[in-house]
Amino acid sequence: MGFDENIEMVRLAFYQVLMSSGPFLGTALAIGLIIGIIQAATSIQEMTLSFVPKLVLVIFAMGFFASFFIVTLTDYFAFIFDTISGID
Image 1 (cartoon, helix red, strand yellow):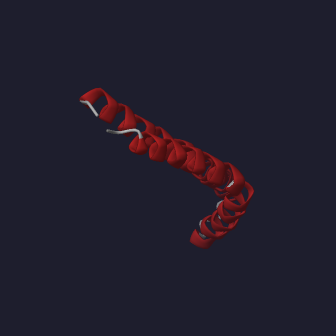
Image 2: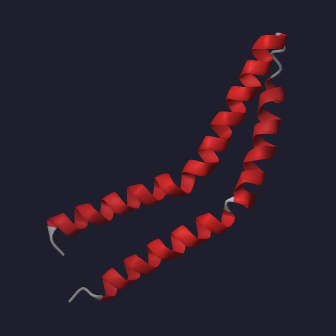
């Protein structure tokens, strides 16, 4: 494999990380923003009020997006293994 192929593999790995973690991080960001707005509006500054709902909803998001996560990782690793097996 040449330099260009190695760079392409690294690019695909970074893309896969973004695609895999995006739904979970997006959910955490949205919930954190909503809770932050509610806390600012009500002047309640309890730390557990932002942590517990975010934790619960991210766990639910992991369950909801699990099939997407598994399919994308399976496709990625199948591509990587096919590429490795094709190296002479």
